[in-house]
Structures are given as C-alpha cells and as structure tokens.
Length: 311
Ligand code: ACO
Image 1: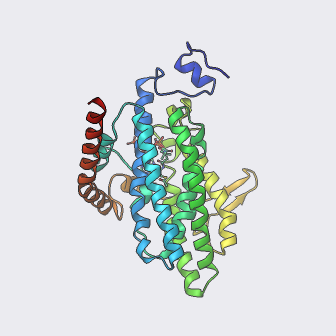
Image 2: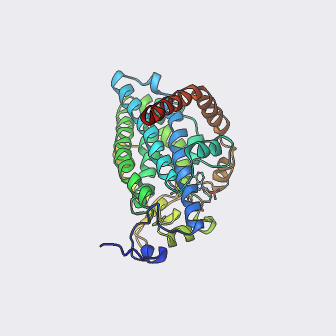
Image 3: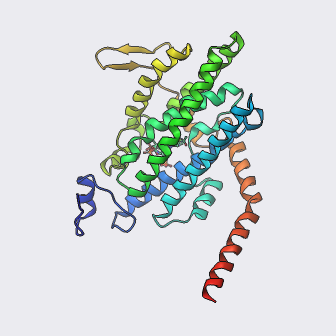
C-alpha cells in the first residue's frame, strides 16, 4: 500500500511498513539499530577467523574452494551490514574503531576454537543454522535497509548451513574415528550455539522495546526453542547424539524440553573472558593495521578521480 507522506513513526510501525533512512525516527530507535547492526557486522567479520583457520588444511581441493568462498561470503555480509548501519548516520571507520577498542560487541560464538575439521561442519550446521533462525525474522524488521540486507544474507547462510551439514554427514558416516570426531564437534558446539540467541527473556534488556518497534519479531527464548526443535531430526539423520540428557518431546507444549546453556558462561564470554576473545581481537587489530595502506591507496585514488572530474 502507498505510504502517506504525513505518516508518523508510530503509524508506520503499526501498519507494518518500513522506516527508511530519511524518515523521522526516535533517537533511541536509531541508537538501538546502530548497536544491533554494528554488532551483527562485527560478528560476520570476526566470524571469518575460526573457519579461516581451516582453509589451508581442508581435506581436499574441493573442500578448500567451498570453504574459501564461504569465508568470503561472511566478509560480504559484514560489508552489507556496515553499509546498512551507515544509513543511520554513522561511519564505518568509527564502527570498526568501536569494535577494536571494545566499545562494541560481536557474537559470543566466535570466541570458541576450531580444533578439528569436524568443527567446520559443526559451525555450518549449528552456528549458521542458528544464524538463519535468528535472521529470517529480521527480513521483516521495521528498518528497511537492514531488512533488505537480511534477504540476501539469509540465502547465502542457507547454503553455508547445507555445506556444514554435508561435511558432518560425510564424517558421521565414515570411519569410526571420523564419526567420533563429528560427535566431539557436536558436543563442544551445541551449548555455545544455544547461547548465541542471547540471555533468557527475563534477562534480555532490549527485547521488549525492540519487539515493540518490530526490530525483533520473536524473543530470544522463542528462537532458541525453534532452533532446538529443528536440530533434533537433523541430528537423527546424522546419527549423532545431541549432548543433553534432558532432551525430550513435550506433548503438551508441542516442542522439545531441553537443558538451557550456561548463561553465566555466556556473560563471561560476552565480557571478554572466553577461550579465544583476546586472540580474535588481537588478530583483527593486526589485520586492520596491515590493511592501512590499502585504505590509504583507495582514498588517494578517490581523491584523484574527484579532482579529475572538477578539472
Ligand atoms: N553474543 C554477544 N553479545 C550478546 C549475545 C551474544 N550471543 N546475546 C546477547 N548479547 C548482548 C546484547 O548485545 C546486549 O548487550 P548490549 O546492551 O551491550 O548491546 C546484552 O547481551 C543483552 O541482550 P539482549 O537484550 O537480549 O540484546 P538484543 O535484544 O540485542 O538481542 C540478539 C541479542 C538476539 C543477538 C540480537 O542483537 C540480534 O538478533 N542480532 C542480530 C543477529 C546477530 O548479531 N547475529 C550474530 C551472529 S550470526 C553470524 O554472524 C553467523
């Protein structure tokens, strides 16, 4: 339906239409979007590291080519997301600085190590699977540029999820040692993947407001439940066991009961004290410093072209 020029922010939200960059919006809405989109962008960029660790050690040329393309996709997602954040009046350079000096966060999940090749499979299946469950509803987010970026990101994430699942399926149906490697990866990645959805609803500071603004469409716990329900059947086909003795079908709820992740651990990891936090930030700072000449060259090139047009 065509939008009336005079629609207020509240009317646009109530009508389930999109807020666009030039529309009036409450300052707190703008701030919360910058926070979430920047964190999301940083997660994509930091998320290149755990898998990048396996590019040179992938077990075949084909696996290497697929993983390389996948990690490049993550870089692309980071770039669309920084561009979406820039429509809110911040600069990418400032957001990158905020990541590097710890003023902005990135997802807890990328602070866990990738110890074996099976971890690359587990990341695709579980981490990208969780990302899809979280991000498909973001395609209907009230802020237009974020919602539109999510459509393409989700299509690519679906491919990532399938490639991870296929790696684990191959290992799980291979030798006994390969099966054990796949099971070990699932054992280590299961609870950190559940924790990705954030604190339980009662402790989620932003959920209520973000849901009222239609930035978030479902709560952290709702999405976590949806993820568990999706994984159970997939684990069965893999022939792997989800490491949870409390996992059982609840007829009344029409959903699986499951053991919650350790939220105290999530808080520690978010605050900087996970297994790889220091290494991840250190690596990003180094890559940023080593890339300075590329940014300078791009700026010099842009300046040269700007003056050439004026002359
Ligand atoms: N890792 C790091 N920080 C987290 C995590 C997590 N898994 N979950 C919650 N937090 C932080 C929040 O950012 C917030 O901190 P802040 O106030 O300093 O920003 C605090 O914990 C409280 O959480 P909530 O109030 O529940 O925060 P929010 O409403 O933003 O919900 C969520 C968190 C679900 C992650 C939301 O921000 C979101 O959907 N983000 C977009 C998706 C995303 O970032 N995905 C990244 C991983 S996917 C990938 O890259 C493959």
